Length: 467
Image (cartoon, rainbow, N blue to C red):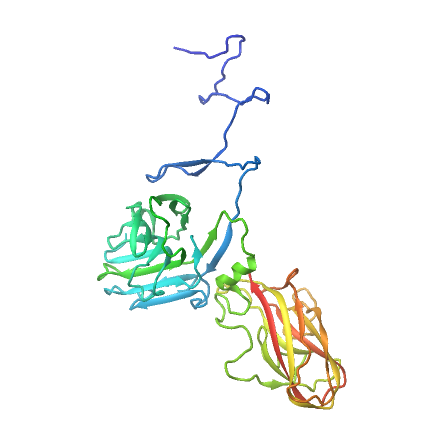
């Protein structure tokens, strides 16, 4: 039986497309228009998890409520050394290595009972076919006693766990007790292929923790009557592998990269602060590089004394630090006092530029001068592709850019321990940016008469971050 739908006062009928879809449209006249509510889907109904849709929200002034994310941490597992600036490690029998872009727990493939490895973070963030006898965890967690050896579960946390029976779960843990679990999410063998990389996300709101794998929501846990997700109130990144008995076969947990974000942020901290918190302060080596301090500052030792040149880093290399200058370089000649090369990008070193936000030079007479009497004129050289200040601008090379910094006077025959006036300059409004592979140098030039003997000591501070 055919049915037609039309209004009672005209010949207008409801149109239907060839594929059986009714043709409808909202009224174009604003006086007769009704309401259409906008909404967004958090995730569809998949893997037994019910679809969630939320309407857009406006404030009392009819403005659409929006938020912005704040980046708290981001790390790529590059290079051959675990970044000890940001990662705390613990192990028992199982080994931890980093190579080929992967941080690997149980790199030696131990199947021994009690073998364990754990990597967790020093930085804390505000809340924010598997064999038998092997537990794997990844997400956010806190250990009361640091990382330990990896044989104990976290005190607090929200994370994925493959338990000793091979069941993949989402876990909420507080004060040493599992207070919520998604139960078996989906077949481990189906969802997590050992031959593929997977993107896993743990998201925590005020009332619900959600677990995502490869952009599909696979489980959620409601907060319920608990006062908070964690008793500690802060969590760190957390990766753990532990053999609770003799494992059926050797297993590894590999992590290529992770990031931590916080949304609904009204006043996020400056990017430079977030970069410093995640180990990217200019004063220390970055992931894939030589870890430790970047300044030329040996423990309980003075620097080597040398005459500066304008083609080498004769006084030593470092992003600031202590440098001792034999003060006999001829007048009008630029001398490199401090030089540093930003590590070039490679397959093992992420390419990060150096942003210098402040520079300070404090100098004093270390050994009394003979003769002399001059003004020391200072500059910052940066961007050159070789250590020499004579490097020229060409298709494949860059000459140093210069920023004048100021000057101070050095009296003839100045006695030892006489302090010279401080040179200080801020670049907060427009940081000096030095790209991977390029050099930055602090340079001094004399105007007047060069001493025939004597030593000037320099303590140079360069503040900034890498990104």
